[in-house]
Amino acid sequence: MTKKTLILGIESSCDETAASIISENDQGKPIVLSNIVSSQEDVHRKFGGVVPELAARSHIEKIDWIVQKAIENSGIDINEIDAVASTAGPGLVVCLSVGLSFGKAFAASLHKPFIAVNHLEGHALSPKLNSELDYPYLLLLISGGHSQYLSVKNLSEYKRLGTTIDDAIGEAFDKTAKLLGIEFPGGPQIEILAKKGDPNKYDLPRPIFNKGGCNLSFAGLKTAILKISKEIKTNQEKFDLAASFQKTVIEILQKKTKIAFAEFEKQINSKEKKFVVAGGVAANKEIRNMLINLCKEKKYKPVFPPIDLCGDNAAMIAMVGLEKFKLKQFSDLNHPAKPRWPLDENAKFLKGAGVKL
Image 1 (cartoon, helix red, strand yellow):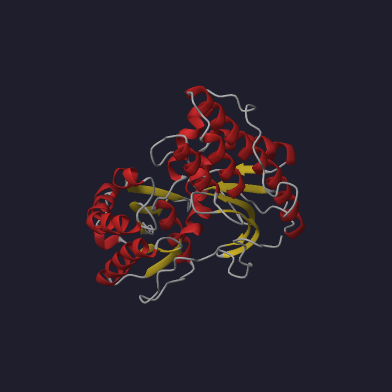
Image 2 (image 1 turned 120 degrees about the horizontal axis):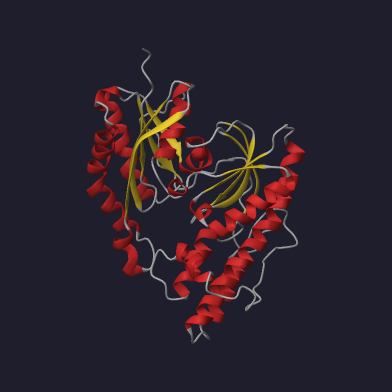
C-alpha cells in the first residue's frame, strides 16, 4: 500500500492561531484530517480591533499546543509528516514570525522539507478542499485585509484584474459594525441586523462605480456610514443602515464582477468558465446568493470553500503545501516573513490619494 502524503499546515498571519494536517484519498483528492483554529476575539474585543503585540503574544502562548492538538486529532504519528507549510505573508509581521519560526524549527527537527506559503494563495486554493477545481479560473478574494479579482492560470501564476484602491471589503463591514455599536469582530453581525432592516432607507455612495474597471473602493462608503451613524436614535434605524450598507456592497460587487468576467474572458479561452470566491466575506450568504445568480446568468460555475474554511485557517495553508510538495517547490529555512506579498508581484501598487484609474 502506497503511503499517502501528509502535510502539516501552520497559520498565524493575524489573530488566529491555527494548525492542520491534510492528506489525500486514493483518487488524489485532499482530505482534512484535522483543523484546529484558536481565535483571539476575547483578547482584542475591548480594543475594537487587532492589537499586533497582543496577537503575537497569544500566538506564542498557544502555537505549541495547537500544533500538538492537530497532530493528535489527525491520528497520525509525528514522524509520518512529509513536509511543514507555514504562512510567510502577507500579514502582521510580529504574528507571521511566530508561525513561520515554529514551522521552520519543526521541519528542521524532523529533517523534512519546509514550504513558505502566501496566505492569499491559501484562500485561492481553499475551495480545492471540498471541490474539484482545475485551472484556470477567476478568483474574487474578499476578506478583512484584501479585495481583489485575479485570473488564476496555475499554481503561483496570478494576474490581478482589479483591487481595492483604499479599504478592504471586510474592513468596511467591521468598521460599519463598530459604528453601529457592535463588538469586535462585528462584520458577520451586519448580515444578521440587515435582515431586520429596510435596504432602501439610506441612499449610500458607491465609489468608482462607473469607472476604474473592476477596481474597488470602500473608503467613501465608510465615511457616509460614519456621518449617518451619528444621527441614529433607534434600533430600527440601526437595522436600516446595516441593510442599506449590505445592499450597497452587493450592488458594487455585482457590477464589478460583471466587468471582471469580461476581462477574464479576454485573457483566458476555456470551455468551462469557473468563478471562485474565497476569504472571510465569502461566508456572507446574501453576497453568495447574488454571485451564484450572476454566475447562472453569465454561464460560470460558482465555487466556494465551505463556510468554516472561509476565514483564516491552516487547512488552506496545508493545501498549498500539498500542491507545492508534489512539485518539490520547497523553501529555504531563511525565508523571511513578508508583511506585503501580492499574488501578482508585477501588478502596479494601487493605494492612496491621487491614484489614477
